[in-house]
Length: 128
Image 1 (cartoon, one colour):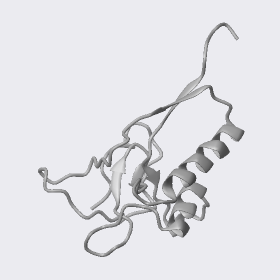
Image 2 (image 1 turned 90 degrees about the vertical axis):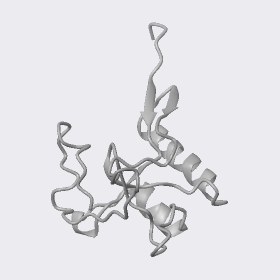
Image 3 (image 1 turned 90 degrees about the horizontal axis):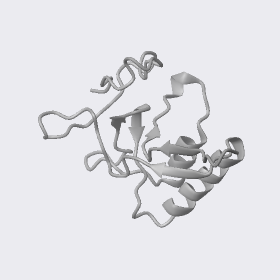
Image 4 (image 1 turned 60 degrees about the vertical axis):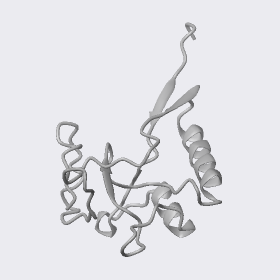
């Protein structure tokens, strides 16, 4: 209340939750149900990337339902944590795992240990 505002940083990269984690993460499950993540051109599955949360998928902003999905997700987040503004960071499809600029098709071979849960190692690529 001292003239300060709370602005949170969000990334469009959505944590790709593995079934073995036994957790529900609505932004991921809702996006899967709505079929609105960017697809891998080879197998038509959601394209896996590695950014800040660990293994991620990216919303396809050309999909007609993505804007509503994003708006609903942000509104739900705001109900939990009141904030004054959003800084959307990394709003382009990014991938920390990249093979000499040639890209790669990523899978998470060890979901029990990726993401690591440690800030020191969170951005180390755990995808193959």
